[in-house]
Image (cartoon, rainbow, N blue to C red; front, side, top):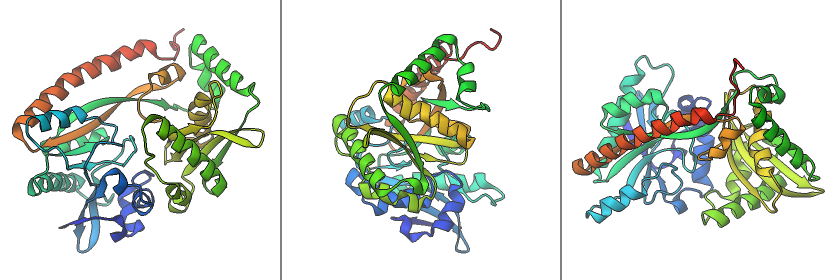
Length: 378
């Protein structure tokens, strides 16, 4: 088995990479290489250093990997770690990160072809490669963000400290339609959602859903203005370029969707996401004018409608947002894993995430009493 590190996915054919990525749209060649090719990465401090394992020339496993000179766009916050490390005389950046840039979505991070008889051995080799790259280049740390829980054993065996987080997602046990979903909620929450949807309908707005090649260049250009306005208002410079959006359906046919609201002929808000094998991923929202409850309509209720129409099992509407609980979302555990080169700092981080995990478990348990769903026995 030969190990190789490449600084661009252009060195790998889409078909070769996608056999590792499966149906996860965020891991597919079209998405990750699209970020590279449309100038989204280096201006934001993401520099690809993907690890490949080949056997007789065939790609058998890969570790998506980036050198980072900041922590923006990661959604697992380590700013306080960086500050503490540098106040103690260390150099926290550059560091290594395994993640989907700008996307707090869970998925496979140690990628292995499905026909490998012993995938755990290859995953262990990928973990060892991440650690070795840190050591060889005197980097402070390697961070694996939002891996699926089943990959934690290999990460922990390689010496990474695991960290617990929480997001709020909508799950579909098999609802026939939106009314069936509403019927599962308490009367109070059901009335709240109906009221919010009614108030949107009363504002003389038309809401349209576009999927794949139904999204025109004009739609993308209008949405991009909304997207930029949100970033300028909240976070500064936008992460994604307009070219990224314009090329997205060519790179991921059928995966992108836009839900757009207009008054008359003028669009005033939009929500963007991607369609996966069993999950709808809501990603970005923006608007040019305020309309009551329109954010909930586009980002939650219309995306739930789309999930139901497509028969998908889950809506992942992004990080944060306790207000999602009242609208039928539930807490879902998320994970990250962290390898720290300095032994003393590694011990401090390990102690911190242990205490943080206890607090997070208590928090997640406390949310059970706030869920929007009625007691099935009532």
